[in-house]
Length: 388
Ligand SMILES: *Cc1c(COP(=O)(O)O)cnc(C)c1O
Image 1 (tube, rainbow, N blue to C red):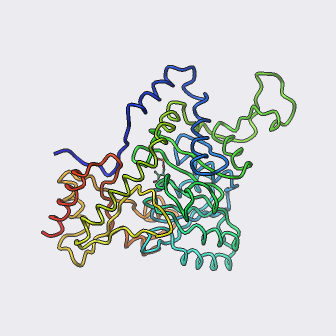
Image 2: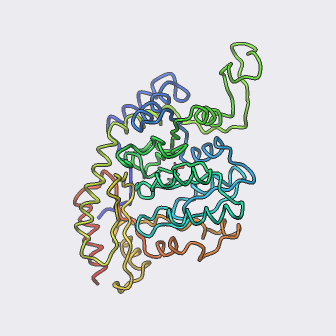
Image 3: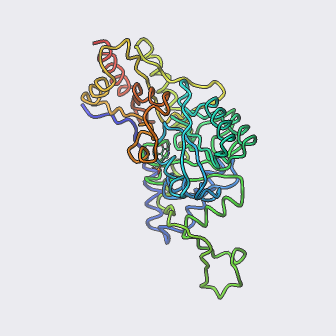
């Protein structure tokens, strides 16, 4: 019996042909395909600008830099996220802090955010940027977060690595109605892929221009941005300290092709989630709760074990699933409990709701190419383990 991963890409012959076409063309990188991909993303999301880069991690980094994050600044995010959502602040020399999660959505809690902001205001320690993470693809309560940003004066980067194809209050994630910048990831386990890759969307021309500069060494060929007249046709100027965070045209071609099936992919994920809800309904589990006013990208399907009603431990259930070929995973280890973060003074117990989640959560396999038979196997094996 073959192993069922928790997530994997779905690649068609058309996708393959799109990449091959670029390989036969004049430009493998810095050609016309990256701007076309950016246009595809910005059209889909309803944002004015999209800046494609080589990973969501890079997108988070240049998004922070574009918003002026630097030494002495503070950035807040959720402890239940991939480390990249927090590391981006540290890359900029800023410090990081966390807001505990809502026990129902597993996204950062609005009540905790408000409370922490009031405390921070008194102590003169307000964050410069807050990075809400749309965990599993379920949008955070962006309207409320935006309201708080106006009241307390912080900027917002949405980490929508899990959420492309989703909607918040009827509008596409990535339109930045309630944020400054939104970032997406195109790693193969995510909803669509470019192998490695990411993008940042924004409606602010100045932020888009800064991010474009930073993804390519801080170099400009635009005479308008130069400090003096161009020396000639060869001339460029470095006007900031940037990086090589560029996406290749091969990756962008794969991305454009994948975008054609994005809605289909997310619909399939919703079918699978609905089926999980039905097949697992009778078990001692907490199934994912969904907002009625939003449409999740459904990158992940996370269950929580009701341990008081189960004979096995969390670890034993996880191991039993893995032993039987079910590629479960755990998203995520609370970032503040990572050894590197503990050296900054964070301690276990700092964010109790996140730590409770970590003791109970398991991500079941969820990917658009998953078959009904594979899903039935996951459910029957899980049922046997829990009823043993
Ligand atoms: C995957 C992921 C990232 C990083 O994405 P890369 O494209 O691999 O750099 C950041 N944040 C979250 C929430 C993610 O899931």
